[in-house]
Length: 577
Image 1 (cartoon, rainbow, N blue to C red):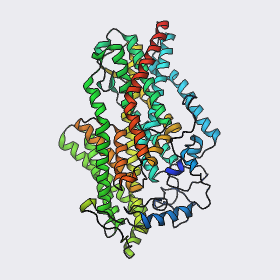
Image 2 (image 1 turned 180 degrees about the horizontal axis):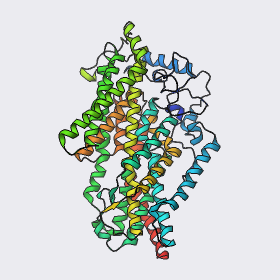
Image 3 (image 1 turned 30 degrees about the vertical axis):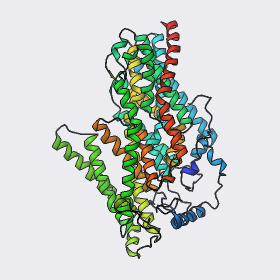
Image 4 (image 1 turned 90 degrees about the vertical axis):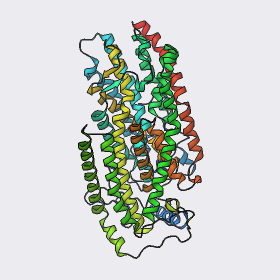
């Protein structure tokens, strides 16, 4: 649970009503991806499934025009939104600046929200006593210190979940592809699964090669204090950033904390300055690459889907191709099943083909009636007031309307949900090491292990980190989701897919090329890119300034807090040892 000084509202965040794109909400309990049956037949979910299958509305819930020249289409969609919300109580404009607490965000009672928070807190305090990693035959003092160490790791993992869940789910919620509750519950399952199944079992004692470990030979107590302080410092800054809805890099947080500890307590020679330079350069490289790729992806969607004679059919045809390319590339680059190149390539192609076939079947099963309808109708008129300003993919293209718009939103809504699920699973497996790496190293020192370069992480510690991430995203995840999904630029399924696809592609291939990349910074840049594709005024400059400022101070703040916490911990440990 967050400490008591953090209240449930913030002046710098927005309400879920804003970033859920005016989706009609039911007061009844919702399962994952539950149908919204309260809307009229003509306007509710495109992804309607009978008998509890996937349903959600994309075209009818969006109040944002897909056409570059927003005008008539935006007004038509706005009328649909007003119709859906005729009987709904809405907040005042002033109230939109106040982010509600967990209860209001998920539409549950205050007592239920409190019960969830209390259960997570009690589990965090008691579960360590049942973990084998506490060690057998240890004295009571070492067991208590091990328990405290696990709590430090949980605190860091909790804040990773609170801040980084927006990397996977922010655009999906902002575009209306998923409701907030659906996104959080889905992410909870996938983040924990990723942390448990894909979390690295072998990690460097000093994450990302930031510290020179030989400097701390024979100073195990100091190193132990520094590791715990780094976790506490990074967690503190992440919590502050999450409170204000700032998406910051968890990797940069832990790096900044370790740099501060190493510089003050080990000297200039204790820091790999070249590694630090690579990290800071990602502040520029990541958002620029993300913005550039998402800009091109979104422009390609507008050029090759929107300008087609039948945009709905074009979207349905393009989706399996995109899935084939994406799954094949990811399988080959990130998860090669064989070290033999031809076999690994064949396996990746097989996975890509299976993914493409699955998406093809889903789209034609759920949207088949609309696809048939689109072929039997006369071509729907497009806005003739929009003129080409340039050539190729940079031309202004009038967006589809009516049935065509419904199909396009439906197809890209599916695509966005799939990409969000993958990113959530991958994030759990990757970023859990930011909390568990220092935690495992501290436990190794505490239990008498050598402070070498490699530490084997037990499975129960990986599960512990996954539990921490889930706890954070359940209680505070909605805060940063609001920033990614709504405050930077308005998102629809096509824009959200372009941003997520671009961010995932850049992170994957840049990592393989050895370029310094931050997933958080890349996604923020990608969301800005789809905003720039609609015009410079479509990106909220004030929000971008706040985010960039939070990036710039992450390492200095983390370093300062780590030094302060290390000073306190060394004093406390001097009384114990």
